[in-house]
Length: 105
Image 1 (tube, rainbow, N blue to C red):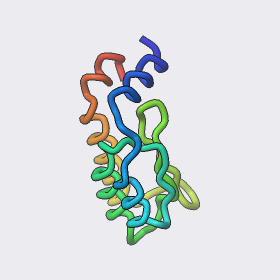
Image 2: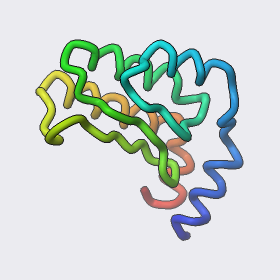
Image 3: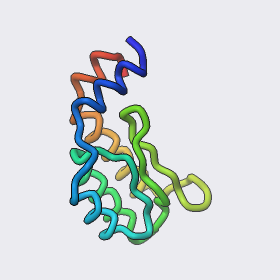
Image 4: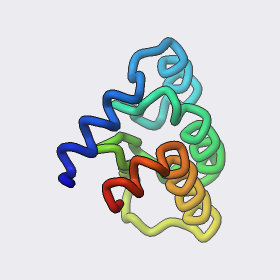
């Protein structure tokens, strides 16, 4: 099973177009949010709300079904934000646990 097959199945199962994505971007204007599925909106919003005080997250994207986070400055994050990122990664994975397990990711 290849990453390409995983990615195709991921894209087939998710919608990437919705007005709520614009609302999410408007709510967090300091962070570039691109290419994320609608199913991730609440998870991303929770993460960015936790980041408001430290303002370390520069951009959030999705690549081949995996969350990609780019940080401002160095990539070190506080313990609190590190926990929030791990929580978001876990929640994203849980949405498609069957898919991740099927392909061994």
